Image (cartoon, rainbow over all chains, first blue to last red):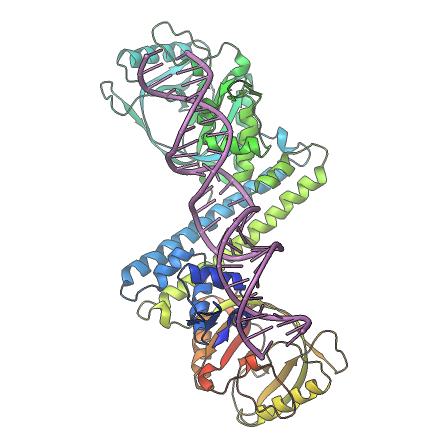
Length: 281
Length: 281
DNA sequence: TTGCTCCTCACGTCACGTGAGGTGGC
DNA sequence: TTGCTCCTCACGTCACGTGAGGTGGC
């Protein structure tokens, strides 16, 4: 029998860790002196401890280790646990590799400009959405798109199907804001209301997003900065650009928007550019 | 000005997160109503928040983010922080990749045998150590090595230079336990005592280790299992095997060992095999 | 006997999550 | 007026770390 100090030195863990495993029911001492509360371990408990430390080092939580080492009968649960952890590790490696590239892109960019002046690109998942959509080729943004939005909002309002999410524009051209732009105006609909012919905008597992405020003059330069950043981060565009209008001015004569999305001052506009991306091979 | 709920929806964070950043001094609301305590944010604070969320997603802690976004003057600290994090990420990826291989090796192994019966190989760093050493070619283990240990222990004891660490054996042969084994007996010395000609055993950044208890009959089969495991884990031996005697029987006539390392029953022997390894290219 | 070992609280870490219980705003 | 939003405690998470204050063992 070994005292806790000797046992802990052999396994190179702290006494507190052994206390914790005792309390957690992962590894209880072979014997506890009732008088003094002293914990005593047998030599072969070292092997049990090694097993625990191995699984912990591989990244399992103590709860998972309990399952993995628990009663011998549950082969399936044990196997599923290890398989699940394998996937977690694989995903985590891929994410860290992308993080590393993004960090390099950021460091490059902020050698002279500080981070505070760099365009901030965030990666996020875009959920699928049911929208009322209207797609057209227009010669320029000004006027046409506003009219399309007003018609779409009015149509959605008439059916009381408007969901509480921001309207957006899809740019179907590969060359953006070329002549005759192929744009699609989208108004999110509540999932319950299927009165209107809802179009489903597919989800994007990963999208590069920039949220900015102020008027639309800056959009082009932000989009350009975003493209440079994507390139340096090893990401590739894999779907149409979305321009989401979170906060804006609107002449709402035929419909009613919640006041919190509206503003009169263009300095308070909040807009988001979203580009679906995949990691370059 | 935006109320906290609207602001949080735009940035897709919880209200609690904003509370936390306020408290942490990372992002304080542009205005707080003194009557109600309500927090109000401006639209352009969204960009500050995005910056924070970006750095957090890259893996920085809130403290680090505070430094990274802090007063503009400290360029050097900011750059060092990003460089440091780059290294952290790189290391973390390499470690996860090794973990993944080790996990695969473990899953393979425990398809039929459960984890509880698998040989547990742990990876660890071995620190450099000053030892009293004596190296010889011996025809077999039995007898010779015991005599070498007793002589070495006696020599170390005479100079009162014995450190409180376990003695071990280095196997210099590539073919292990071949005929005429080239073994080196090592007794750890306290760093202060340099009276004896101490030999420095180099550190190993990474070593595969198996601790087992019981008599020495099992050593060969454990070593074999270890070799198979190393192969499957993508690891390569890069130094001599060490056999460390943590707990054992000894006839200590010319020296004195602390009683906690001694035992009379061979079932209570505690031994550790250590093999320095590197990741295969 | 002295110092070393071990014990049990109890609080801290990190970035929030999750109610509880109460008030302000439209 | 009613429901919705927001507020401030206060405690939980996870795997221990770090004393505080006291006792047992050799």
